Length: 253
Image 1 (cartoon, rainbow, N blue to C red):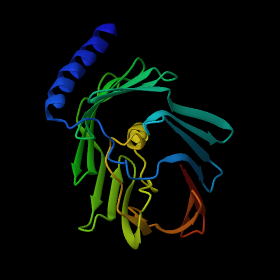
Image 2 (cartoon, one colour):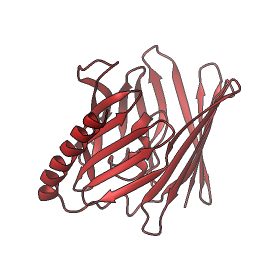
Image 3 (cartoon, one colour):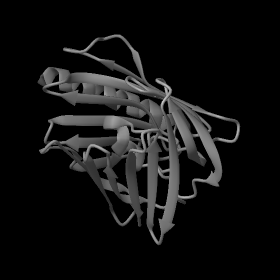
Image 4 (cartoon, one colour):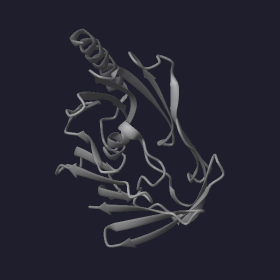
Protein backbone atom coordinates (compact mmCIF):
# COMPACT_ATOMS: atom_id res chain seq x y z
CA UNK A 1 0.00 0.00 0.00
CA UNK A 2 2.85 2.42 0.88
CA UNK A 3 4.44 1.71 -2.48
CA UNK A 4 1.14 2.54 -4.24
CA UNK A 5 0.80 5.75 -2.27
CA UNK A 6 4.36 6.74 -3.17
CA UNK A 7 3.60 6.13 -6.84
CA UNK A 8 0.53 8.34 -6.62
CA UNK A 9 2.43 11.02 -4.71
CA UNK A 10 5.34 10.97 -7.16
CA UNK A 11 2.91 11.16 -10.08
CA UNK A 12 1.21 14.05 -8.32
CA UNK A 13 4.50 15.92 -7.90
CA UNK A 14 5.32 15.47 -11.57
CA UNK A 15 1.88 16.64 -12.73
CA UNK A 16 1.99 19.51 -10.28
CA UNK A 17 5.31 20.66 -11.72
CA UNK A 18 3.87 20.51 -15.25
CA UNK A 19 0.73 22.43 -14.28
CA UNK A 20 2.83 24.99 -12.40
CA UNK A 21 4.34 26.05 -15.71
CA UNK A 22 0.85 26.48 -17.17
CA UNK A 23 -0.94 28.06 -14.26
CA UNK A 24 -1.69 31.59 -13.12
CA UNK A 25 -1.86 30.56 -9.47
CA UNK A 26 -4.44 28.70 -7.44
CA UNK A 27 -7.00 31.48 -7.10
CA UNK A 28 -10.61 30.46 -6.71
CA UNK A 29 -12.86 31.62 -9.57
CA UNK A 30 -15.53 32.23 -6.91
CA UNK A 31 -13.85 35.28 -5.41
CA UNK A 32 -16.84 37.49 -6.32
CA UNK A 33 -19.56 35.06 -5.18
CA UNK A 34 -21.23 34.47 -1.84
CA UNK A 35 -19.88 31.39 -0.12
CA UNK A 36 -22.28 28.68 1.00
CA UNK A 37 -21.57 27.70 4.61
CA UNK A 38 -24.51 25.39 5.35
CA UNK A 39 -26.88 23.20 3.29
CA UNK A 40 -29.88 21.33 4.68
CA UNK A 41 -31.84 18.88 2.52
CA UNK A 42 -35.05 17.13 3.59
CA UNK A 43 -36.49 14.39 1.36
CA UNK A 44 -40.10 13.09 1.30
CA UNK A 45 -39.09 9.86 3.09
CA UNK A 46 -37.64 11.98 5.97
CA UNK A 47 -34.06 11.34 4.89
CA UNK A 48 -32.00 14.42 5.72
CA UNK A 49 -28.56 15.63 4.63
CA UNK A 50 -26.83 18.43 6.49
CA UNK A 51 -23.64 19.96 5.15
CA UNK A 52 -21.32 22.33 6.98
CA UNK A 53 -18.53 24.21 5.20
CA UNK A 54 -15.82 26.19 7.01
CA UNK A 55 -13.59 28.83 5.40
CA UNK A 56 -10.45 30.56 6.67
CA UNK A 57 -9.79 34.31 6.75
CA UNK A 58 -8.58 34.16 3.12
CA UNK A 59 -11.92 32.71 2.00
CA UNK A 60 -10.49 29.26 1.31
CA UNK A 61 -12.44 26.19 2.36
CA UNK A 62 -10.68 24.36 5.20
CA UNK A 63 -13.35 21.87 6.33
CA UNK A 64 -16.35 20.10 4.82
CA UNK A 65 -18.79 17.78 6.60
CA UNK A 66 -21.86 16.05 5.15
CA UNK A 67 -24.07 14.07 7.55
CA UNK A 68 -26.84 11.84 6.19
CA UNK A 69 -29.62 10.45 8.40
CA UNK A 70 -31.79 7.72 6.87
CA UNK A 71 -34.04 5.18 8.59
CA UNK A 72 -32.37 5.79 11.92
CA UNK A 73 -28.81 5.33 10.64
CA UNK A 74 -26.23 8.09 10.31
CA UNK A 75 -23.35 8.29 7.84
CA UNK A 76 -20.73 11.01 7.52
CA UNK A 77 -18.47 12.17 4.73
CA UNK A 78 -15.97 14.77 5.86
CA UNK A 79 -12.90 16.57 4.59
CA UNK A 80 -11.03 17.14 7.83
CA UNK A 81 -8.19 19.27 6.52
CA UNK A 82 -6.99 20.75 3.25
CA UNK A 83 -3.49 21.63 2.09
CA UNK A 84 -3.14 24.33 -0.58
CA UNK A 85 0.34 24.22 -2.06
CA UNK A 86 0.95 26.05 -5.31
CA UNK A 87 -1.19 24.30 -7.90
CA UNK A 88 -1.84 21.20 -5.83
CA UNK A 89 -4.76 20.91 -3.41
CA UNK A 90 -4.74 17.91 -1.06
CA UNK A 91 -7.87 16.96 0.90
CA UNK A 92 -7.89 14.48 3.78
CA UNK A 93 -10.88 12.34 4.78
CA UNK A 94 -9.55 10.65 7.92
CA UNK A 95 -12.73 8.72 8.75
CA UNK A 96 -12.68 6.82 5.45
CA UNK A 97 -8.88 6.83 5.12
CA UNK A 98 -9.09 8.76 1.86
CA UNK A 99 -6.72 11.32 0.40
CA UNK A 100 -7.63 13.44 -2.63
CA UNK A 101 -4.88 15.02 -4.72
CA UNK A 102 -6.20 17.76 -7.04
CA UNK A 103 -3.97 19.28 -9.72
CA UNK A 104 -5.08 22.78 -10.61
CA UNK A 105 -4.40 25.08 -13.56
CA UNK A 106 -5.76 28.62 -13.85
CA UNK A 107 -8.04 28.04 -10.85
CA UNK A 108 -9.61 24.81 -12.13
CA UNK A 109 -8.94 21.19 -11.18
CA UNK A 110 -7.82 19.23 -14.23
CA UNK A 111 -7.12 15.92 -12.52
CA UNK A 112 -7.76 14.20 -9.19
CA UNK A 113 -6.17 11.10 -7.66
CA UNK A 114 -7.98 9.52 -4.72
CA UNK A 115 -6.24 6.92 -2.55
CA UNK A 116 -7.97 4.71 -0.01
CA UNK A 117 -7.00 1.51 1.77
CA UNK A 118 -10.51 0.10 1.27
CA UNK A 119 -11.30 1.46 -2.19
CA UNK A 120 -7.85 1.41 -3.77
CA UNK A 121 -6.96 4.27 -6.07
CA UNK A 122 -9.05 6.15 -8.58
CA UNK A 123 -8.40 9.04 -10.91
CA UNK A 124 -10.69 11.66 -12.40
CA UNK A 125 -10.39 14.07 -15.32
CA UNK A 126 -12.41 17.30 -15.45
CA UNK A 127 -13.47 19.03 -18.66
CA UNK A 128 -14.88 22.57 -18.93
CA UNK A 129 -16.34 25.10 -21.34
CA UNK A 130 -16.01 28.75 -20.26
CA UNK A 131 -15.15 27.61 -16.71
CA UNK A 132 -18.34 25.53 -16.44
CA UNK A 133 -17.86 21.76 -15.87
CA UNK A 134 -19.26 19.65 -18.70
CA UNK A 135 -17.85 16.19 -18.06
CA UNK A 136 -16.04 14.23 -15.36
CA UNK A 137 -14.33 10.95 -16.24
CA UNK A 138 -13.29 8.47 -13.59
CA UNK A 139 -11.10 5.35 -13.57
CA UNK A 140 -11.04 3.04 -10.55
CA UNK A 141 -8.73 0.18 -9.63
CA UNK A 142 -8.67 -2.87 -7.32
CA UNK A 143 -12.28 -3.93 -6.69
CA UNK A 144 -13.53 -1.51 -9.36
CA UNK A 145 -13.26 -1.60 -13.12
CA UNK A 146 -10.17 -0.03 -14.68
CA UNK A 147 -12.31 1.14 -17.59
CA UNK A 148 -12.71 4.89 -17.93
CA UNK A 149 -16.29 5.89 -17.19
CA UNK A 150 -18.19 9.15 -17.59
CA UNK A 151 -19.55 9.73 -14.09
CA UNK A 152 -21.03 13.18 -14.79
CA UNK A 153 -22.17 14.72 -18.06
CA UNK A 154 -23.58 18.25 -17.87
CA UNK A 155 -25.16 20.29 -20.66
CA UNK A 156 -25.74 24.05 -20.94
CA UNK A 157 -27.41 26.21 -23.57
CA UNK A 158 -25.81 29.21 -25.28
CA UNK A 159 -26.77 31.48 -22.35
CA UNK A 160 -25.03 29.25 -19.81
CA UNK A 161 -28.26 27.84 -18.41
CA UNK A 162 -28.37 24.21 -17.29
CA UNK A 163 -30.39 22.04 -19.70
CA UNK A 164 -29.17 18.50 -19.03
CA UNK A 165 -27.48 16.38 -16.40
CA UNK A 166 -26.52 12.71 -16.24
CA UNK A 167 -24.64 10.69 -13.65
CA UNK A 168 -24.25 6.93 -13.20
CA UNK A 169 -27.80 6.56 -11.92
CA UNK A 170 -29.91 9.49 -13.09
CA UNK A 171 -30.58 11.52 -16.19
CA UNK A 172 -32.46 14.83 -16.24
CA UNK A 173 -33.44 17.51 -18.71
CA UNK A 174 -34.06 21.00 -17.37
CA UNK A 175 -36.15 24.02 -18.24
CA UNK A 176 -34.18 27.07 -17.06
CA UNK A 177 -35.91 30.11 -15.65
CA UNK A 178 -35.16 33.73 -16.59
CA UNK A 179 -33.83 34.38 -13.10
CA UNK A 180 -30.07 34.58 -12.67
CA UNK A 181 -28.32 32.36 -10.13
CA UNK A 182 -26.71 35.38 -8.48
CA UNK A 183 -25.16 33.51 -5.57
CA UNK A 184 -23.88 30.71 -7.83
CA UNK A 185 -25.41 28.05 -5.60
CA UNK A 186 -24.82 24.41 -6.47
CA UNK A 187 -28.51 23.77 -7.02
CA UNK A 188 -30.38 20.44 -7.04
CA UNK A 189 -30.36 17.89 -8.42
CA UNK A 190 -26.66 18.27 -9.31
CA UNK A 191 -24.50 16.54 -6.74
CA UNK A 192 -20.84 15.80 -7.39
CA UNK A 193 -20.49 13.07 -4.76
CA UNK A 194 -16.93 12.83 -3.43
CA UNK A 195 -15.99 15.83 -5.61
CA UNK A 196 -18.52 18.15 -3.94
CA UNK A 197 -15.92 19.55 -1.47
CA UNK A 198 -13.72 20.53 -4.42
CA UNK A 199 -16.65 22.45 -5.91
CA UNK A 200 -17.06 24.47 -2.71
CA UNK A 201 -13.30 24.94 -2.56
CA UNK A 202 -13.78 26.78 -5.85
CA UNK A 203 -11.72 24.46 -8.06
CA UNK A 204 -14.43 22.62 -10.06
CA UNK A 205 -15.78 25.52 -12.05
CA UNK A 206 -18.83 27.69 -11.83
CA UNK A 207 -22.38 26.44 -11.72
CA UNK A 208 -25.18 27.32 -14.14
CA UNK A 209 -25.83 31.01 -14.77
CA UNK A 210 -29.58 30.54 -14.32
CA UNK A 211 -31.94 28.87 -11.89
CA UNK A 212 -34.19 25.92 -12.79
CA UNK A 213 -37.96 26.07 -13.36
CA UNK A 214 -38.64 22.41 -14.17
CA UNK A 215 -36.81 19.13 -14.62
CA UNK A 216 -37.76 15.81 -16.20
CA UNK A 217 -36.12 12.50 -15.32
CA UNK A 218 -35.36 9.71 -17.78
CA UNK A 219 -38.50 7.92 -16.55
CA UNK A 220 -40.61 10.95 -17.50
CA UNK A 221 -41.27 12.20 -13.97
CA UNK A 222 -41.54 15.97 -13.83
CA UNK A 223 -40.38 18.23 -10.98
CA UNK A 224 -41.02 21.93 -10.41
CA UNK A 225 -38.85 24.34 -8.39
CA UNK A 226 -39.68 27.38 -6.28
CA UNK A 227 -37.18 29.75 -4.67
CA UNK A 228 -37.40 32.06 -1.67
CA UNK A 229 -34.55 34.19 -0.34
CA UNK A 230 -34.45 36.04 2.95
CA UNK A 231 -31.28 37.66 4.23
CA UNK A 232 -28.53 35.05 3.72
CA UNK A 233 -30.85 32.05 3.36
CA UNK A 234 -32.21 30.61 0.11
CA UNK A 235 -34.80 27.83 0.17
CA UNK A 236 -35.42 25.70 -2.91
CA UNK A 237 -38.63 23.64 -2.89
CA UNK A 238 -38.79 20.82 -5.41
CA UNK A 239 -42.24 19.25 -5.97
CA UNK A 240 -42.78 16.10 -8.04
CA UNK A 241 -45.92 14.90 -9.81
CA UNK A 242 -47.06 13.06 -6.68
CA UNK A 243 -46.89 16.34 -4.75
CA UNK A 244 -43.97 15.04 -2.72
CA UNK A 245 -41.70 17.84 -1.59
CA UNK A 246 -37.93 17.98 -1.23
CA UNK A 247 -36.55 21.08 0.48
CA UNK A 248 -33.03 22.46 0.02
CA UNK A 249 -31.90 25.30 2.29
CA UNK A 250 -28.67 27.18 1.52
CA UNK A 251 -27.10 29.60 4.00
CA UNK A 252 -24.38 31.91 2.76
CA UNK A 253 -21.82 34.06 4.51
